[in-house]
Image 1 (cartoon, rainbow, N blue to C red):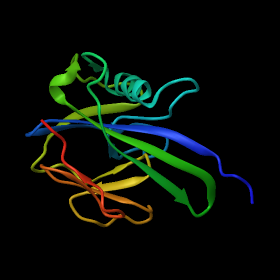
Image 2 (image 1 turned 60 degrees about the vertical axis):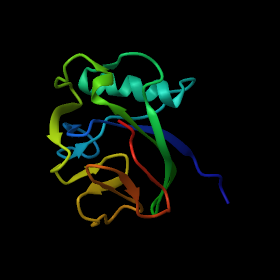
Image 3 (image 1 turned 180 degrees about the vertical axis):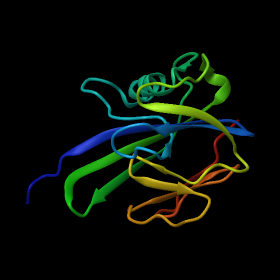
Image 4 (image 1 turned 90 degrees about the horizontal axis):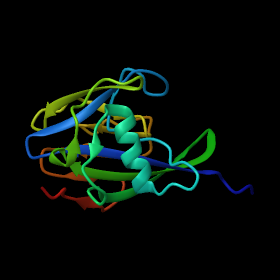
Length: 162
């Protein structure tokens, strides 16, 4: 059998105890959906550098310094009709770690939401995030609550530290 192509992706959730910053996807895959910030890792780039770059490209905010991303998981997705394997490196960072005001870019329209009542939203990085667990047609589900992230397809659970 042919060795599958593996695509490295990043996803950053910027949040604190009361708020989460999300972006409305304006074009391409996932258009019209709320999402965290992230994208492809470029050749020669570390996943952390890619996550920071994508955050800045998509909401115009930079991390105050290196080392402010907390990695929670690497999620692997295999789609039935696509031979490409997607590995999504999931990070969080505190809102206070961001420099600059979130602003609309060509890719995203950022908006701050209360963590107590985030919108239902689908990450374009190929998994579903919502207050419920209705995640079809994706193969993995992440449920967001004000206090933790939990992954329904594994035993992984990690609380972001604030």
